Length: 148
Length: 143
Image (tube, rainbow over all chains, first blue to last red):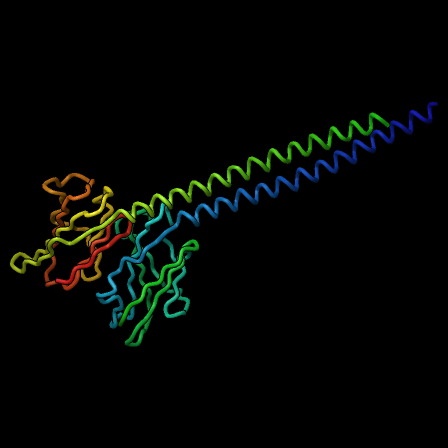
């Protein structure tokens, strides 16, 4: 009889250990997934809230022929703050990715909703004719067409 | 054997319960965050649809180098004076000599039907003036 109780005890402990292992793995997996959903929702909400508008007057000169710079004024018309840093603003000028870009907020300290930034694209060297600049901020894309 | 089955079933049940409570909290919070953002964007879009501006007058006085612009809020939204931007020949101007709504120069509210009067000093005759309201609706005037 003693051997039966001992084997029952061993089986009981083994089943508890296995159940704890299964439950632990499952909980860990689901919590990792939840963390992913949480992070993703933050990203998506930020993307949805981001909206920018190029307010430069295309009828006035945008391109400075002597300094070879293109100056764009961009307004934050969304509902979230955007870092006013060229690392967060992708600029394509006539399809070419530009890196020598300076961004300055012209009416405040940070690029909050309603604030305007001045984006200066240096060494642009554009020929006379039609051109387009594309700005991508947080998934929001804006195209600005102008003539030089 | 009965204890083993019920013991392990209880542990697994508790595990599943904990996992689903975490997953439910995360997805409910995430969903709420995104739907809040969507409704904020919808509000903005409605505001933009209800915004309309028109330039009543834009004149340059060469005698005292002053550009005066009068803009009327022709929409149904209350706009912010501080959020309104003025571009003179593509140059951003915020050094207003005069900025008033009607006769009030301290208010930030630009109500429907009211006239915003802006004056800036420019040494030369400008060609184009652009006024951009807070929601992004803009008007251009060629002098």
